[in-house]
Image (cartoon, rainbow, N blue to C red; front, side, top):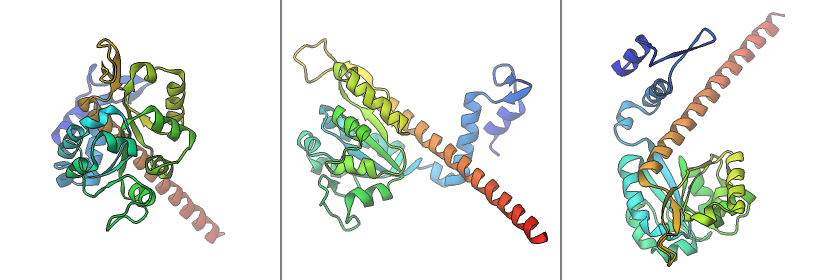
Length: 262
């Protein structure tokens, strides 16, 4: 066990631990350290020295923030994921040419349900099966509304419906649009459905003639932290599910042994 884990566990103090009904409860950062240690054991020390995620699928919707996507992809490639594949809406492909995005991707940019590549024959199926994580960046009011209401009328919205794992949405739009009742209702539905929504940062809107009008979008550092948190949360859920399955099988074996003796 690494020293930073051993020291935290062996020296519980008032600032590193608390008591809850006579039961030791580790502080948040210690629980995160233990989870990170579990991740190292699961992925391998060598893997942790490289990237946290193996395969990231990025869905690009038609926000003007799409023009900043190369900067995001460069950071994600350097600090978070080994491979990236991209789905873009037709609106997004008018904001930024797919040829530009392909410089940062491990395949062509998929725009249409009928697009193909040597390894992808049915994009809305093959891409979500390939992905370890699915990030919608930037997420517009349109894709949020489609995902919340089960509407699949293009490749990206159909892929979101097909996704078995939770999807992470990084909204980017005008601040008034983000705060509207309709968008907030759809965001709440996404969360109820088990998805993850990054709370956007406030900035100047580039689509308004009024300099004081604000827009919202994901900051790169905040997005990276949220992705790491999301990944670790999914790992924790997977570990709990695995433990439950092991316990269930052990109980089945015990019951089977008792039945055989009877």
